[in-house]
Every structure is written in C-alpha cells, then in structure tokens.
Amino acid sequence: AMGRRWHLFFAWVFVVNGLLFMAYSLFTRHVTRDLLPTKRDVRNVGRVVKDHLVLRRPKGDEAKHYNVLQKLAYLAVIFGLAPLIVLTGLAMSPMVDAAVPWLVTSLGGRQAARTLHFLACFSFVAFIMIHVFQVVLTGFANNIRSMVTGWFEIKREGAAHES
View 1 (cartoon, rainbow, N blue to C red):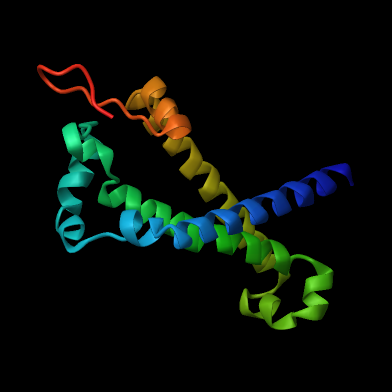
View 2 (cartoon, rainbow, N blue to C red; view 1 turned 45 degrees about the vertical axis):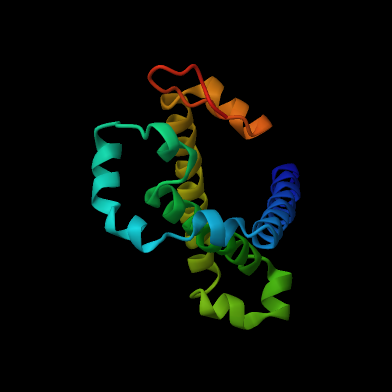
C-alpha cells in the first residue's frame, strides 16, 4: 500500500512538472524555436545518425544547438511518451474507469493500459539513461554547468572558450 501511495505522489509530481514545462516551453517558444526540426535538419538525419554511431560530437557553433535526433527525441518524449504514461496510468484507476470509460476502452482495456504504461515507463527510463550517458560522454562538467547556469564552454582552436 505504501508503494502505491509513493507511486501516486510522484506520478502527480511528474504531471505537474510536465505541465509546467510544456506551458513554459510553449510560452517562451522553446518548442518552435529550438525543438521543431527544420528542412535542413531533416535532410541531415543520415549524417547525424552516422555521427552518433561513431561517437563524433559537434564542434563550434554546431554544439550550441540541438541536432535533429535530439529534437525528435525530445518532441517524442514531451508530446508522445509523457502523455501516454499519464493517460495509461489514469486508465488503470477504477475511479477514472467509472468516470471516463471511453479512455480505458480506447486503450484496449485495463490490462492493455497496464502493459502500455509499463512499456512507456521503461522507454522513458531508457531515454533518461541514454541522455545521462550522452551527457557524460560529451563532457559531464561542461554539460551540468550549462544546465544550471546557461554557460556552455566551446573549445576552439586558438581560443580558450566562449559562452
């Protein structure tokens, strides 16, 4: 019983945090300015995939921006995976089933919702693990500093750094 209470508590922390992030991202135009792939991004998908496979990191000004794989991953998580986790979680609730039976039906029933919920949650955990791996791989201290302060150091030949 205590595990379920903790799960529900953190589920609501996840929902509130997600809603605040989505609102902030839409209000500040972060989604349209930084996350929506451009035509140029789409044309370069193959090169970016190859760069990732051989662990080639962007340099210079290119390192200041999300690449197309990052954009697609963030969009998929923010507008696909996170809502799926919330909706499937709600669909497992008997109270929600009684109030909004079409939700459970549209997901294929309570057991299908449970299966989708676990798959979505494991996908979210995999996203986080890959994200942390990439942060460590591309310079842990520099990345953490940039997340906290907004200051990202770019090493250039002949220059010390830039923010």
